[in-house]
Image (cartoon, rainbow over all chains, first blue to last red; front, side, top):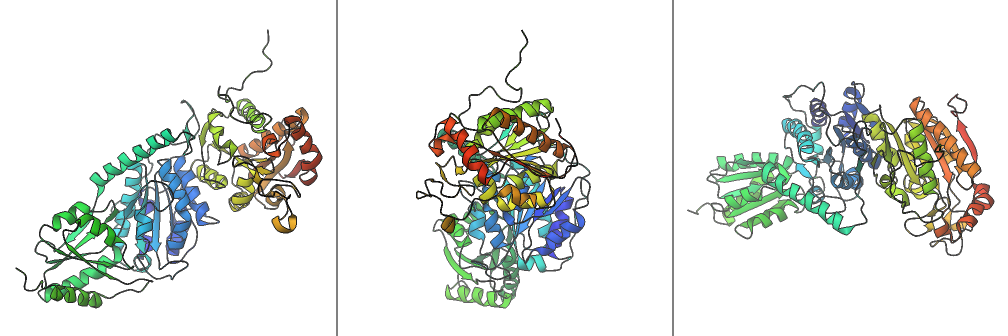
Length: 353
Length: 251
């Protein structure tokens, strides 16, 4: 099954009731999957919207009404959705947004890239907010993390972004779905469905009182602190004895893993830290690693975005090197192996005690 | 003594913030009377996007949710698709519905979404201080057309209701005004019919209401009522623009 379809199936099995999308390559299989498998399900709705902006605002509406709702797009389309994501965050509404990212800036290219890291992890739209960002690196993880995205969105009442890329979306891999679609989901207590048997309710973001808005921002901030504490996720691969730790996420981490296995077979003690949540970022784990490892190689398919979070986390307690390929070019494991070896030998890690 | 006039149940006991002579308070009153009369208070959701009427949620005693500027029809679509049992109306200004939200409005209408748009046309951007709206009349002076709207430079007043009427999914479109007791009664009748078409699941309905903005028109309330009759209705004639509900008056 291709990655895009796997997301669709996982979403349906997570109880996604509403999907609204707009065609853009390389994620069309997902929209098509939902058109085929969600649109006629009882109590579910699928719309091919007139724009990405309309799609995210339909998600906002469906979420207002208490529905599990999702939209998907790729980089240029995700830019258009930022308005809606900001409103979702402000109104404390859950939603799942899939970004199968492609090369940028501008219309860019349709091949895989990781150049939306900043946009995804810094909120993306206007205002002081964050979104949880999950970064799958395989077909199986696309399915698992899509499911988790719905749960996290409902648990914390925040929009959750799944940041994949063109390559993950197109790759065919065997996938095991661990859940059956629920027959019925409980209705969220803050859902707007008409003021039956209760006082009427207002869901809004605008206020003419700065102090009121400050309180809203404090409340969001406290929730974000809780998310940082509870939900940070990563994979640590062969880091125990590593003299060089590669930091990579998503498909780049998949490529790096091959490179690290090569390096290990040549006797180089290399490991990898792969953030699974890009926000919250596993800063503490990096700090812990820096007690034993002093050299870090950040590998991204962009010209250096996550590296800033790595540097912030390490607080100068380790040397940080960078290797990046931007613009939708896919580096090979052999190429990354060469970079690893070069750093390893140049920094004298082979002979280090 | 028999009470003949009272505050509608679904209108909150909160003083309006609107300027003296503004049409919003009249339309709010008419809407809430209808919500009471049609027994909708516990099964209707209102969507006020940015504009003077973003604060409508302080006055309507029904579930209300703000939308982003222009996105009312998309948000209403999402609600209605997720929970079709509920009634949904948007309450949008001319800048919102006929400029930034043109696409959302046309496409929601084309899909025949079972929602009702209340479209307040006062020919200016009110909340931001009286800039040119898509519906600003030719030669009308606003803060961004200080020499009068020149149609060669700034384009023509947009006849959004007529545009929406062209799409198949729109079932009921009427243009009314709130500048006289007779027109206010017609407005109420039009909104009743629009809401009824939604109850009957027929498709998209829209009522455009020519509404005075004395503050930004720099007129007295009375002058603004007269200006609607003398100037606005020339460009925006009142009456039913489209009715394929197959029903006679709901009154």
